[in-house]
Image (cartoon, rainbow, N blue to C red; front, side):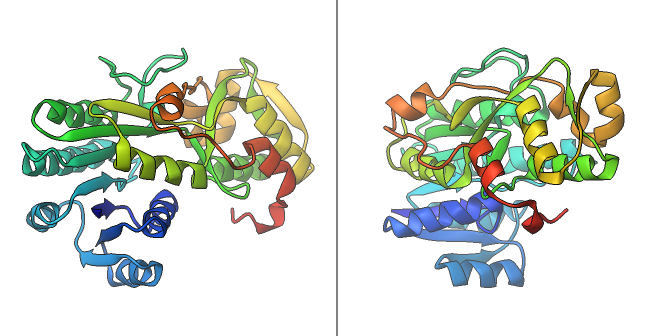
Length: 296
């Protein structure tokens, strides 16, 4: 299958590219820079220079492939509305180009974009927590226009060898404050190893059903207290449960994320795609890998 992939040099995207190539797919990747272009070539992909706003280039690429996997997102926390708008325009451009072709379009959202503290199910929602979350509904609307649309919502912790974006931030704040904090309400998050997630992306683009949402969830519930305890053990720091307000004073921008549950089931992923997680759990990896290789 000829696949157009965005975000190919990112933490998740690079694993997805590797997974696709290992299973015989031909992958064209959007490259924002010469450095990204070189990385894609080294990994075995076919790079095309451009970014998410190069819409004419994107239209041309879409016309010449069998499927599109959209992973890239501008993670600018100072201007998320602009980032979400760029994402929406990309989705609209690709969706319009693919209309009436029955080609596959896999869009990335996030489990944390779904509002509420309840367990989230793999279904469309009326309300999301951000502009980016709304974009998954924009994508799913193309399912009625002759596009085979699927959405993956990765867990908030996508990890490998004890590393993830949020985990490294938690380690950073614990080291900075000299205490590994957690919220007394003992919130829980879902988690997944990045290699298991990459396999889910491949299976979803190969045999995903139209208008279906898949959760990138290996473990449904990991308590943030247990993560704080693992961080405390590794850094040899005290562990302390505090109120949400006190926690916010000690973890800065991380506060809106670690003061709520972000959990979801994975029934569609398991039953529809016959997928299952194969890699060690998050806490197993945290206990195994030494913090000396963590880059704060």
